[in-house]
Amino acid sequence: MMKTFKYKIYPNKTVKAKIDEILTTCRILYNNSLAERKQAYEERKESISYSQQQNALPQKKNDNEYLNSVHSQVLQDVLRRLDKAFDGFFRRTKAGEKPGYPRFQSKNHYNSFTYSQSGFSLEDSRLKISKIGEVKIKLHRQIEGNIKTLTVIRKNGRYYACFSCEIHPEELPATGAVVGIDMGLMAFVTTSDGDIVETPKTYRKAESALKHQQREVSRKVKGSNRRRKAVTVLSRQHEHVANQRRDISFKVAHSLLNQYDVIVHEDLNIKNMVQNHNLAKSIHDTGWGIFLNMLSGRAQTNAAKKVIGVDPRNTSQICSKCGEIVSKTLSDRVHLCPYCGLEMNRDVNAAINILKRGMVSICYDVRDGLSWMGISIPV
Image (cartoon, rainbow, N blue to C red):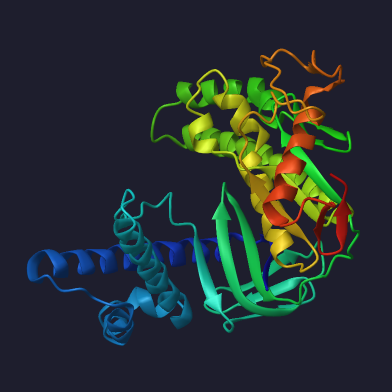
């Protein structure tokens, strides 16, 4: 299993200049290699492979002195990125999706380079990088496993070192418990056990400050230093909101996986849901996609854990006790069944329905009870 550890680094002016120069060189190599592939196909109907471009690197380094100032593995990784972009293009074309031909990269969109296994060393609070020098790094947590690659990132005027490490995943202990979760706008997550995690509303809380800073950007002259500084401040504010959203998603996902062996959620089509312009901003603010990716990704590394997505249709409308449809609007926060008299929070009712659907989807015999991996639930 691969895990990435991200740390902030503090380069001086000289090191910053070297990093920026390497980024510029890598971007130019990427664009030139893309142009080479594009021209070969348009003029001769030939496809140039990664191996061909990699084998041509020594000659290119003889012709371009700037390439010699960049570590060879970094240059090879640039070509791998381009090859990966073409692999994605061909895959999407074959699947009938929107192809998305690889794009030429501007100076604002090429902000990282990677060393593969060598070209760097870490000693205490100092990181030595080939062709760059020594830089101070803040190791706020211990690196685990075997370091495979180092990626240097420039983002919003700050610099980061990301170590991709091969680790043995931590096996979470089995609990024998199952849960259904309902995700909403009023409550971020509601479980079938009645636990509720409120929506953090990170963007809504920062919206006023973001609007103010956006106006500051709009007032500045395009291309001026003052505008660039204002854009950097705005970008950092957006980054802070995104970090808050990821933090709450990670903590909730970690808590659920520690408590339950089976977690059932709605298989939401978020892309279609945000077409509703009245709810789009709130849906994006909740970060459902980030949360579900974290939840399923962590569960895949633990044999004792399982995350299941089920059809979300009518989970809020069906009575979890008698199974009858009880129509409700979004403003109705209480489920009150006129058929069996059940009264409870509508999201808890939905979570119970989600749990039932999940158990049915993984069990074959429901006559005596639902079972999976030693877990037993009475029908």
